[in-house]
Length: 171
Image (cartoon, rainbow, N blue to C red):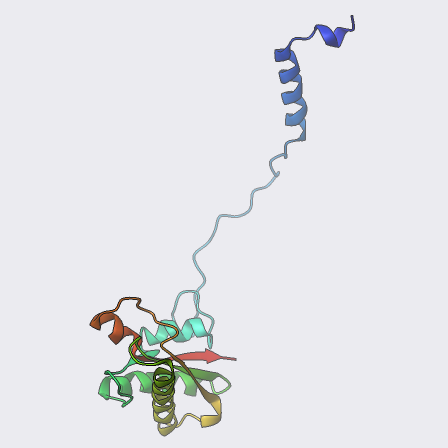
């Protein structure tokens, strides 16, 4: 009887484990450095935002990248004017940046009506930015109507959040 036939199952398992452990990866001789503090932008003081990026725009706007409307309305009120003035200041700092203004509506009404209302809202925001000195060739509009809600409820609070125009910067 050959010698390997006399080995018990436990001995075979031990031999297999030893063979596999020989294939295991070895620890590197030198470990990578510890992570340092997060990157910051010296121009903006914002954590991790590249100057002129959409991320910086959203951080600096702190919610002012979006304006809200009353039901079936597309007029720019004083709160919207303040938000759009902040957007215009940012766009003035980055004259090579363009932006798309997205118009949205709540779920009530027909698809066609809400697309038209979203377009009027986006154009109202664009026209106000232009009145503040932003070159109209840098701005485009897009209506999503009721197709992209941020709040999914069928109540007054959700509808109010969905009646909006959002400015998104692009290269």
